[in-house]
Length: 238
Image (cartoon, rainbow, N blue to C red; front, side, top):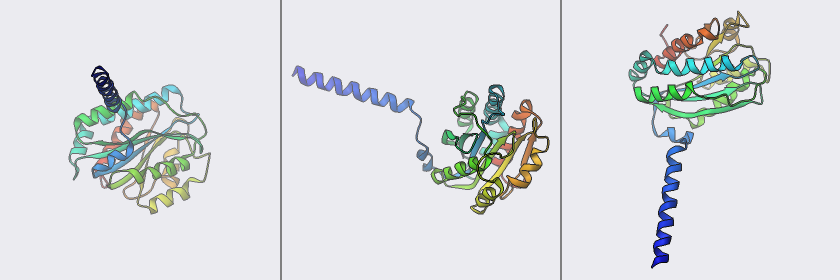
């Protein structure tokens, strides 16, 4: 009898331990597929050599705070399904891309606040390298295979540089646009004052695409807020 009680005690302890791990581990990306959404949005964040630690922190702080703003929450709530799905990719050269946030459904103010806090504190998880926008686009586009069903699929590329690694970017842009994906750009003009024109001609495309420039990283947060608002609301908003 004592042995039986001991086995039951061990079994209960193991069950509790497994449950504790299940509660603290992130859900796999595929779990987001249980809901249809208005927008499946990939935020592709530049981690190349030109982005130092301070500039990376300004990017993540700006993105996080943008999701926590009331206008963005209202835009999500005004959608047909009142929810969007978001994934985050960090990228640099043609060999370095990583998913740092798997598909996550945002369906209300509490979700938006939680996502904002998570993004504000997200560390850099990728080796520095050149700037391969083409590889970042290809890597990001493949993630839509595990995304929730969405009315719109958008890749949001933030960078301060031009494609200098991997395949040419224009053919990649054309291929993804042909698949129904929209590519928008947030260009940081601290190193290339005409980067927004470069994006218009070579990177951005698809239904309702647009490019928003930020003069420098200090201006990034406000530019990202305006960008998210347009992306969530949909084509036709200026």
